[in-house]
Length: 308
Ligand SMILES: C[S@@+](CC[C@H](N)C(=O)[O-])C[C@H]1O[C@@H](n2cnc3c(N)ncnc32)[C@H](O)[C@@H]1O
Image 1 (cartoon, rainbow, N blue to C red):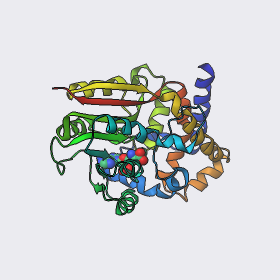
Image 2 (cartoon, protein in one colour):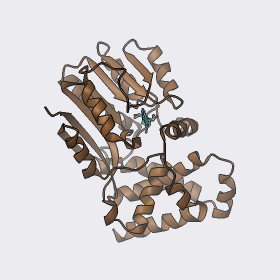
Image 3 (cartoon, rainbow, N blue to C red):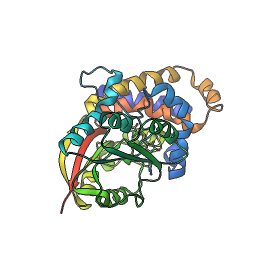
Image 4 (tube, rainbow, N blue to C red):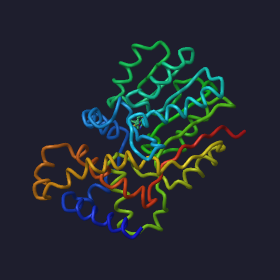
């Protein structure tokens, strides 16, 4: 632990030599800036994200492999089969890779999906042209009034609820659309420690990581679970897979290390030629593996259903 704390402090010092960390931690992502973040990073994601999956792999073998990116969709598939599903909705589908995989597997099930306009949803539209049962639409998951109530057997969201500043609103919307025996599956990252229990450095590292990824702030995990309960959901399944995402985070870390090998004075010049939205992402990539190992961040799968 002590070694990891030292590693975090070392990394923070490197970041502080290049970035105005105070400005970064005080930026407040909005819906428009979040869409812009995904638009600006389109090329970067094409390079780093594999097969259009914009999420981490769940590596059961402790070593990263591209097939680990399918684990989230495979998990959803388990519930699709179990519930004799007819209708599925993916919130924040990104490039549509998860729903495309599932829609191909289940040609008789209808897959709806939503993501913000002006981000990366054009990739999902291209995929949908080749499939009769995949229908992505532009929209904000805080307002799902375009969909009929009590319709969906499965609603899922992968690494995107963290972008919301009003999760209770999203949960209200999901509750309306879910059938009584339907499930809502959430794959996401959280803070693993309460803010008042963190050291100054830990909190700075967490905030930089959040803002680097256009996340207003990750919820402390127990707070999020309380939001679920207060929003009249009950937890059916809960898996902490924090350790299984470390191989992906290590990949991000080694890419970011290449950047931080460059002398800070040169980096400050280089940064001027790139959008801050792109460059700040490198900070998150650099810090995340250490935060996860220190259990300051965590990643879980939650399956919930409506409590009557
Ligand atoms: C990390 S990406 C994950 C994409 C996809 N779920 C995947 O696994 O490949 C997060 C996605 O959330 C979307 N997003 C963020 N806020 C949103 C909102 N309010 N409504 C709909 N989508 C949103 C972004 O546009 C982005 O595509």
